[in-house]
Amino acid sequence: MLARTAAALGNAALRAWPLTAALAATPLAYGVWRTAGAAARRRTRALLLAPLRITLEEFDAMDDRQFEYALRDLLTRDGFHARQVGRAGDQGADVIAEHPRLGRLVIQAKHTTVAARVGSHVMYQVKGTADPVHHAHIAVVVTNGHITRDAKTWGQRHHIHWIDRDRLGQWAHDGIPLHHLLRLPARKRARCRATRLL
Image (cartoon, rainbow, N blue to C red; front, side, top):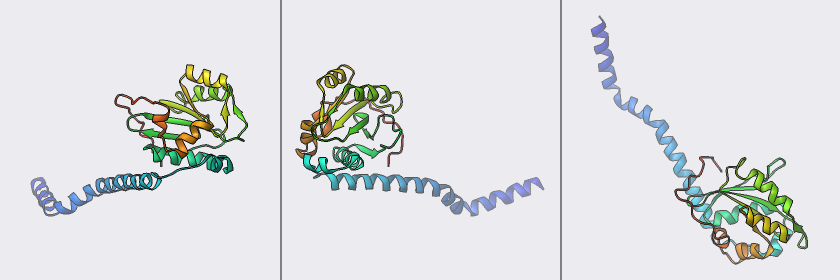
């Protein structure tokens, strides 16, 4: 009886193997389709943003959130996979981006009036959260204003990069990629965390 039952089940499985194979392959095919679609959308977005140029006057007219989204778009233009994350309690990160050769980058955006200056306390905050909280390889403070001399010196000493008004014009309007402007070295086998960004 057991032998007949086993034989019958085996014959049924043989007859139904196309259906069984299709059912087993469906989740895999769906995963491949979603991954390919996301990659295609990122490529399309990068191509659309390739000619992106933003003037300093346009930055000045933005609000804080628009400034963060503009920085995200500039990073996308430069080949990063970026997202805007700034909100209350963001722990020093307004934009987080991944790059296959550079690793993870965190931006603290400081939109301000043209005459305002960003001080050292911002550098301290970014230093304290970039690696331990956001697991960043690179931390950058970006402002459309100016950065104090002390903040620049402290940032250089502690590997916190900065983009002030002059550099922002070179990056956003002149089209110099951020990693060239900051002379960021490529990481050996940079492992970007598998965080879904978009």
